[in-house]
Length: 319
Image 1 (tube, rainbow, N blue to C red):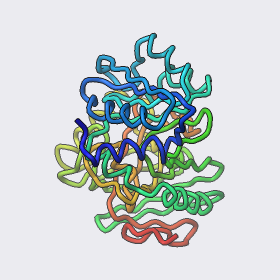
Image 2: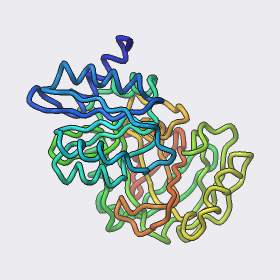
Image 3: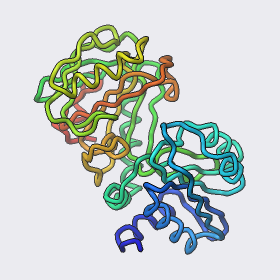
Image 4: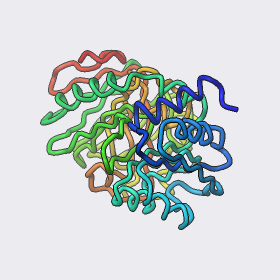
């Protein structure tokens, strides 16, 4: 049986973030590893919606692996879909078909009970307000300069790039994305990123950082990765894919005030007071790098300026 905290988080996820109502149908997709959360969402759905359906499938082996065709069909016949699964369904054809049919789809890849209870305690209106302020600042910006106490010193360009807001609030027909969320991000202009990134929080696919990982960048590409064991892991992951896997793909700012560094990227990249730089694929954010990998590197308490104006100082947003 779900704890009171988990019940409250499930109710918040459906009501405050997905905007479900008594006239709607909801489908909760889960697997054996995330079952506790899936069932809590289902119980909340039965109270908040016209009908709530719980469907548990075998845990997928890889992120992006399609669910069974029976679930794909059901996703297109409900108003809201929540994917509380260990592997991501965010970029599957199943999700795309559901959205095309008009469903709102919230995905929770790898979510845990602590992440659930922490992140859904955030005020969704506060996240929306922060994101909107950041978008106005980053739109039409020429240069973003990022620094940190550990030695990060890099520049990026967002000229002509779409600034994307991910609030986790998905209340309109066809909305989709990660829940919980809280970030603003964009694909930096290719070949115009320079400097050094010192990652000290976490790296997707690796977890929390034990020893800072230093990444040197020139003309939008990694030239060197140094540090300890985790630096070697990052280098091996990117080198294995090759091509433009070592290209700068994303600049993102966390805006969720209740998120914490947990070692799970779903939460880590949303932490207020952090910035993340990703390498690899950025097609989904209107970039041009199409490789089968995307790795986020989270930096704690950085500072950054936009066209010379200080926007974050030692992890504190000044907007």
